[in-house]
Amino acid sequence: MGQNASGVVVEPYLITLNADSDVFPTFQHEGLEFLYMLEGSVQYRHGDKLYPMQPGDSLFFDADAPHGPEVLEKLPARYLSIICYPAKGSKR
Image 1 (tube, helix red, strand yellow):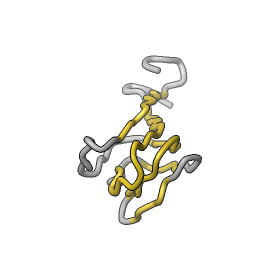
Image 2 (cartoon, one colour; image 1 turned 90 degrees about the vertical axis):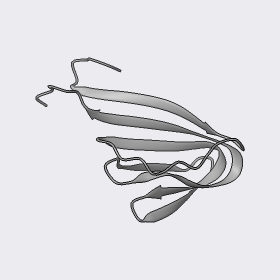
Image 3 (cartoon, rainbow, N blue to C red; image 1 turned 30 degrees about the vertical axis):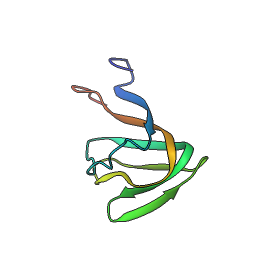
C-alpha cells in the first residue's frame, strides 16, 4: 500500500530461495517486519541470534537490527516478508 490515510506504508513480499540463491549479507532498514515461513527451512538471523524457521513459523521484529536468512537448510524455501513503516511526511 502506498499513500493512504493511515500514515503507514506496507510492503508485502513473497521470497523464494533455491539452490541458485546466494546467502546475502544482512539487511537493515526502518520499520517493523513480519515473516511467515511457507516451505523449506532456514536459520534466520536477527541481531546476534539465529532462529530456526520451518513451515508455519513466524517472526515479528524491528527491522533496524541486522537481519536475513543466514543458513539455507531445506530448499526451496519460501516465506512471506511484510514490512511496515511510517509514510514520509506522516504526522502519526
